[in-house]
Image 1 (cartoon, one colour):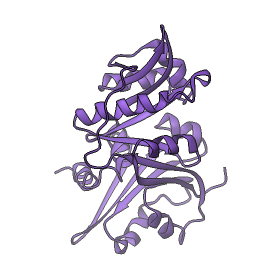
Image 2 (cartoon, rainbow, N blue to C red):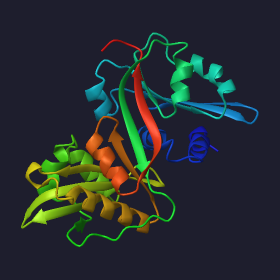
Image 3 (cartoon, rainbow, N blue to C red):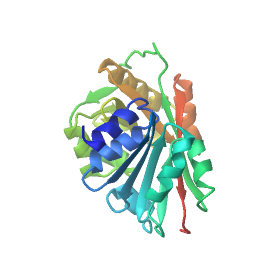
Length: 259
């Protein structure tokens, strides 16, 4: 079995925790440097993505050399991973476990730049699809300005649709007033993102309607929904918790250089 396949198999034992690693490995395996360390039954993984490979990272971290992802089965394996990190490089660590930051901070001077919460459903949670919403399985230019408000570009969204994405929206006549996207992050996990409601139509519960319907459609397809928000976005956090989603992962970005 190829090393990357072995890495994927280990990461998929906890797909929600490791969705960022799985997504990046699937999308950028041709340019990503991958490492798997195994000592008996214990294992550790380091993924190094050139910061210029992914448009988001290149925009947000223009000075960075590499984006670093890691996971390991036991803290005892961590020392074997340290030599795999590029010396003298400007690194962005995207960490899905607070213990990883604690381990790295003994060897790097780290500054937190961003934090995110991932939410998902509890077992048995189901929603009825709201009658006011429209589900669309193809790209609709009318929705682009709303998606762009969340920094999604046309090329990125078209690629999502090519891989089976769908949008959930509410229209007033021919004009969209609220929307979200559901798109594949990796084999099992689908992201509910790009949620946006025009200011004049906020406080009507439209965001709840599109998100609930997107989650139910995702569940009916047999996938695990993931709702991912900035830790300071209280409105999105309240929306997630108000419809019964529960936090499953806290993802943090840490850098070892001065921006």
